[in-house]
Image (cartoon, rainbow, N blue to C red; front, top):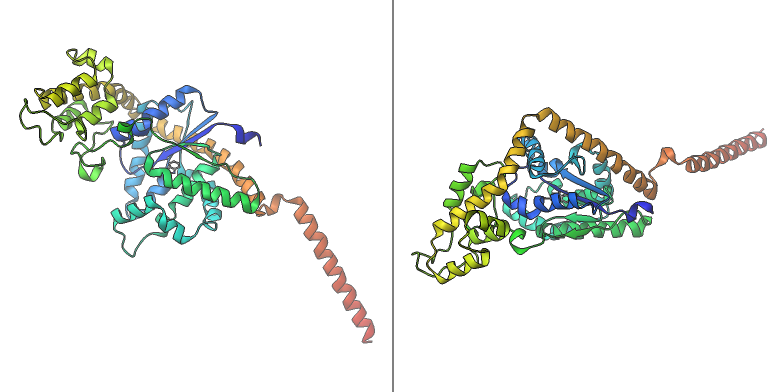
Amino acid sequence: MEEQKKRIMLTGDRPTGRLHIGHYVGSLRRRVELQNSNAFDECYIMIADTQALTDNSGNVQKVRDNVIEVALDYLAAGLDPNKVTIFVQSRVPELFELTCYYLDLVTLSRLERNPTVKSELQMRQFGESIPAGFLCYPVSQAADITAFDANIVPVGEDQAPMIEQCNEIVHKFNSLYGETLTHANIMLPENEASRRLPGTDGKAKMSKSLGNCIYLSDDEKTVTNQVMSMFTDPTHLRVEDPGHTENNPVFIYLSAFATDEHFKKFLPQYENLDALKAHYERGGLGDVIVKRFLAQVLNDVLTPIRERRKQYEADIPGVYKMLEEGSLKAQAKAHETVMRVRRALGVNYFEDRKLIEKQSKAFKKKLAEEEARKAYLAKKNK
Ligand code: TRP
């Protein structure tokens, strides 16, 4: 099939909050590079509002408000709607038709074994009240991916079990109903620091509820304050003490963000991060100097992002229009896949002329036979 040879990228985010610098180094920065690399025939970025609703049914306003926030963060980070199709999941209902068919190819116990879902369930403490939609969201994610024939899915490590489960569904579907769906490949973030940026408090993950995030939309002062109060090396008590750079969030952030240019611009007494690290580890380098540098680096990276965001914030109707157009475009693509899937499953009743003709003939024959039998009996009983 022509389509299968295309390089198609799809990824997305749940709109449950503004995006932070962890999202930026973990995925957004890469997406912008990929978009500009021209390595793909088609790129889709999805705002997964339906998936967000699976554990926010009592909090729809949060999801509703964050669709626009995430769209603004995308545009601010440099995603270009002329190069990528940005769309809203719920506005492509074809995805839900696919989800329903795929649900029949997955067992409950397989869903319960999905490691990402397992840990999310634990975190959310649903107890006995797990929403069925939440447990099944990996299936709807398989629909998201396959609807676009996406063969490249750039996501974080935590999403690997989703891609695996998607491919199991693809395999099962194709072996039952013939080659129809495309296998997906995960594309992980390139470097270690970008894979999981810790919170400013040193906790493993940035999370809104912990208040340990730096948002893309935070202003300069907020970023500086957050950085100056960051957790560092607890054994580095006096400036002259040797310090640890490993597991030190300030240095992890620097390795994700600081370039040699940043050193030239803000801290020319060090050539690069290795030189700065060596001094910190040797002792004699205070946290304040390192933090001040990190604040400058972050603000340098975030300034153009903030400026672009402001421009888009001034035209909210335009941003919604962009999302609407993207969703229509996505819908057209997903519709092609749905038609293919309907044909493979044999639920394409109305377009299947041959089926209609064949059944029409068979029923006519049956009716004629019944008529003949009736006539025969009537004659016999006379
Ligand atoms: N589960 C993803 C997340 O929480 C969001 C998502 C939904 C997604 N559908 C997707 C990512 C399809 C990649 C492909 O971040």
